[in-house]
Length: 575
Image (cartoon, rainbow, N blue to C red; front, side, top):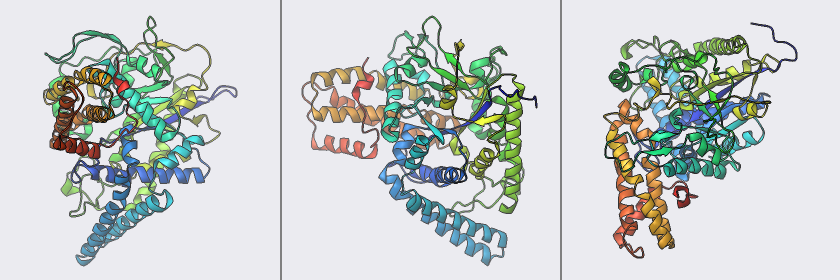
């Protein structure tokens, strides 16, 4: 490793962990619905909070840049989630007890021991949630941010796929909703934002991608303008958006549905020529120099070197044969008792999990990651550069069971006085001095091929027709409200706009394209379209808003099920 001069600024490193789940409360339980949230809380969110607490108690400052989407925060703060988790953990405890009895009775001693470990795991999760954190997972994160141990950033309100939304007002509402929800939960303004699917759109004359869409071609602004208006300092982009080259998506390896879909687009894909002078290890101002945003907006870029070490199930750390296998489960109960064995092994070839072997593998992989990150930074030749490692938070603990422990191991291995310091994106920006370079970015995402096909294809095109039809009705709803700003009209209008935000979620197209809970996604999308359409029809009647008892009952049903964003303001959608 090249020797660092004594007065040369240190290089920096940060994990950017993006926590997100669609709104599932009151929309089914199992196999799709609230259990998704409860499962992620038990396997990822609570273990992460526990790991951060341990790191802080040990004297470490993890400096995670933690992205929590507004829709996830709303669910974690909801009493329905807080009341449901202990019962869910108890179900898992009882399932583990039954498994232990069965395995002991049938002479499978190692599996019986593992079942007792599952019992202990879920007992610990339930105890931590109820007693240590008082059912409020956001409170310790808020405190740790205030104390400087980490930075929390926001996202679009319901993770809407911003480049394809039909009207600028809907882009603004998604971003403004994200900022205002963040303020309510964390008591301050966010400095950064995770653009859903890392999808960016510059300013240009935009035409709807569907024939017959109710919007004409129009000059659209780059997303940085919306971010600047809301006081956002930075966002994260994939490597190819900055410097060109092949866009290697983060999801393709995990979903066979995407692999089949990619075959339809692969032959037409032409990567942009590489611009090697642009470095993913420094931030850039983003925008058109001829039309810059109202205040500086920065980008941080995903590191391509360390990324696949965690994302790749085939040859990354999670594919190590000694880690717990995600796919093979024991029913009823759904606990996992087998190890990866080999990343290409089928379910029948999986061997029994040996938890006593995992500690050694975690140490090796954490040491390798820290060494690789440090060497990568040293080889850039840039003084004071930064390596940004963004991942979906649910990858750790849920997909990769040992992943949260691995994060803690990595933090512990960055020496406080070493050549690389842990930081957050916002903290790093505060150290920048001097004039900084501005770059213009192309349109794209962090999907395979770097564009929109995962979210807009022959299987999801119908959803965009409905999104555009619903968006096009909003100006009339607002006009009617200005003419009759009665409390009842306001309540119904707010609920219609909640349904619009929910139907705009990028999750529905993703689940349809991956064939992962496809039926659930289609039904959820259709239900929100129906709710918005019905409410909008009432709101466009001439004269004061009068509802029948049956109509009011439908409104109350919508408001009870989709009870998020209490601070929602129709002014977010004003032109």
